[in-house]
Image 1 (cartoon, rainbow, N blue to C red):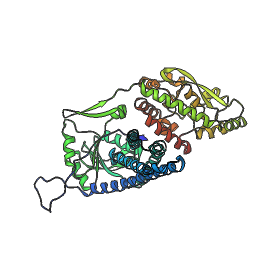
Image 2: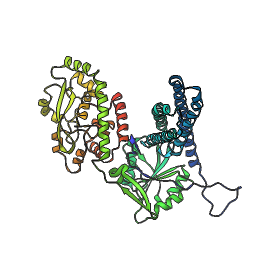
Image 3: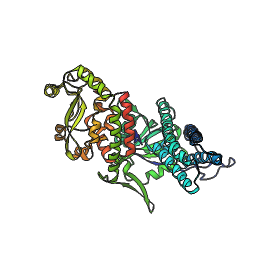
Image 4: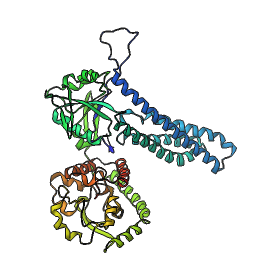
Length: 513
C-alpha cells in the first residue's frame, strides 16, 4: 500500500470486504433478506470495471503484438521449413492464450492493488514467469519448434511492455484522482488522535485513491479534525457510521482505532456495511515497524497477525550484493563517456581536484572513503565552522539552500545528482549499495541515540527512500523513519521501484541543494 510505493504510507491495512449480496426476487419483500447494493457502491464498481477493462484490452494487445512479432521474426530469420509451419501458428496462439489466462488467474488486475504500491507489478512479473515456465515444460515434452524464440524474445520484451503499459495507466489514473475521479469516498473513524494520524498520511501520499468525505470521532465532540490548513468535518458518531455512509454514498470505511472494551465492533460494522461499502480498512501503527513483514493466518478460527523478525544476512542479501555488482558495472561503463565532460567543467570552473573523497560510516560502523565529483570549493571544510549558525538542516545534518561554498558547476551537479555518479565505484568494491540509507558522516553517527543506530545494519546507498521522498526538505525525524523502514523491510522489487523513482527525481529535482 505505498507505492512508491509502495507502500501505502499511513500503514499497510487489513482489508475486510463486505460479503457479496444478492438481488431482489421478482420484487417480493422477504423478511431478513440479504442487503441490496446501494448507489454509492454500484458507482464505485462501475468506475472499477471501466478501469479494469482498459487494463484488460491493453494487456491483450501487448501480448498478441509481442507473440505475433516474435513468430514473424522466427519465420523470417530462422529458416523454418514447411514441415514446421503448423507450429508457427500453434505455438504463438498457445503462448498468447497461456499468457493471458495466467495474467487473469493470478489477479493481476485486482481492483485492490491498482493505483499504488508494487503488488500490481509483482503479480504481472510472476504471472509472466509462470506462463513461460509452463510453455518451457511443453517445449521439453513435445519439442515444438518456435517455443524457444518465444522464451528468448517474447518473454522479456512482453514483460517490459506490460509493465510500461500498467505504469502508463497508473499515471493516467493518478491524474484522474487528482481531479476527484476514479477515487473511493472514505470515512475515517476512531479516536481523534488516531484519525488525525491517518489523515496526515493520506494527505502526504495523495495517490492512494481516497477522497475523505468525513470523519466519525468517538469523543462526542462536533468540531472537525484539523490537518494542516484543512478541517475534516465530523459527519457521524462511531456507532451510526454505517447509516451515514449510506446517506452520503461513502464506499470505504477506514478504521483508525476501535472503541475500548468492544471486541465485536469490527464484525458488527462489517455486517452493517454489507451492500453499502466495498471495503473496510483497518489501520495499524504496527505497520510502521513491520510493514510487508506482516501476514495474517487464521488458526482454528482465530485470526493471528504474524510479524516476521528481520534478518540482516543470508540469501536475500547475497542476491542484493550480486545485483549491486551487476548494476554498478553497467553504470560505470555508461558514465565513462560523461565523466570526462564533467571533469573538464569542474576544472574550468574552479581550482582543485575533480574528485572529492570524504570519510563516511557504512555497515556495522565501518568507515570508508566515499567518492563524489567535487561540487564545492577546496576550502569548504575550513569554512564550515563559520556557517554553522546558518544551518537549515535538522538533527545532526548541515544543509544550506544557498551554501556559498558550492561552485557554479557544483550547483548543476547537485541539482541533478550528477556529483554522486562516482559512488558506483564504492558500490562495486562493496562499501555501499545501490539502494540503502543515506551514508552518514562520523560526526553524525556520534550524535545518534537509541534506535537511530539501526541505520547501520545494512550498507548505505547511493539512493533510497530518503532521496525519492524529499531529500534535504525532509526533517531529521522523517529521514530516520524512512531509513529504518527500508532497513527492516527492503526487497529487490522495492529497490527497483526506488531506482525508477530516482530517475524521475533526477529529471525533476526537488529538495536537492
